[in-house]
Length: 108
Length: 200
Image (tube, rainbow over all chains, first blue to last red; front, side, top):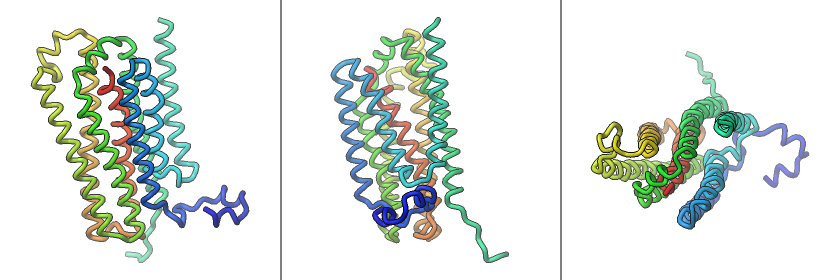
């Protein structure tokens, strides 16, 4: 990453290598795994406090955990914009369906 | 015939992601159905969740999260030309995947024993909301289980290909794509844990 910084900024935002020269090491992924375990423990803990906490845990910690798996384990951090857009469009579509369903439910 | 072999690793990954997107929509539809039913039957979902063994669900979460880690570590190992280590990581992933299925089968067997299985006579006597809960539980964990079996089959082939050098430091997109599939299976389980096992 430090080598990139020496080049002009606009050049390397446009041109992303398919596989960066430097791959992430074992340590990065082990740290992410530890974070996932801690978040799981928090989620389980919150579900024991009360129903409200359980729902908040579900709505915040679960997407966060999924995001960590997508971003690091599934290498989205190291991919160009196209794959990220594909995922965001999919999640946006699901969100629209979700919103449509509940807007219908709300006015019944 | 020709010496030139066309390769497009990014294209291969894009194709895999497009497939995974269809999987996300498949499970997404079920998640949306779940959320509506939970909104409609909050108490029944609470009771249904109490019937499930949360400890087994949590253990299986740790098992799958760890198996996701070992797949991604296998890719790091192959990038660094550490073939033996890559095979060990993949072997660990397979063992963890099988462990997940064994735990799952014990869990399902206990449910069956209590008369909780699709179309069971006992299930018919429960309130409609609980029937919906168990219907979604068996559909979603069952569909997820099929994905675990598919993922294990693909990763077994990858172990064989690493052993026979079909997957190697200069050509490992197949392993990457298999890993992507396995991670998606893990992500789906990340959602299933709080939706079912922690619903009580």
